Image 1 (tube, rainbow, N blue to C red):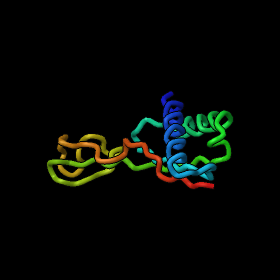
Image 2 (tube, rainbow, N blue to C red; image 1 turned 90 degrees about the vertical axis):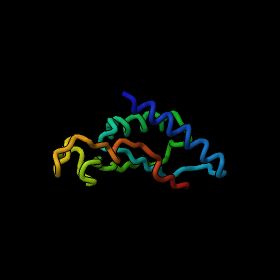
Image 3 (cartoon, rainbow, N blue to C red; image 1 turned 45 degrees about the vertical axis):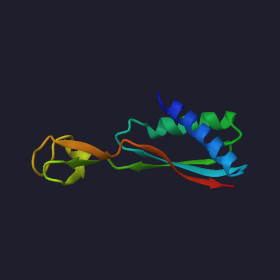
Length: 114
């Protein structure tokens, strides 16, 4: 379960951001992650709740997330397509000369200070 490590990393980043900006309270934190990143939203939310009980910084902050759709680029025909629907083979030209353009990332999208 790498979600616990992700939440720990995010909290470390939040602490640094808050320190740099002289913030003392968070209202909400929004993460975005790709639909093929391997992150399980339910596990991530559970880990956030667990950490919130132990971490005054996020104790009252709402945890929000958004999923970034996985999109694959085909080098052969120069088109994009939904990765989950078609996998690694381009539905337009049948090429396997493809790469994941988006959908594997994890970012802190928004921090709202209280």
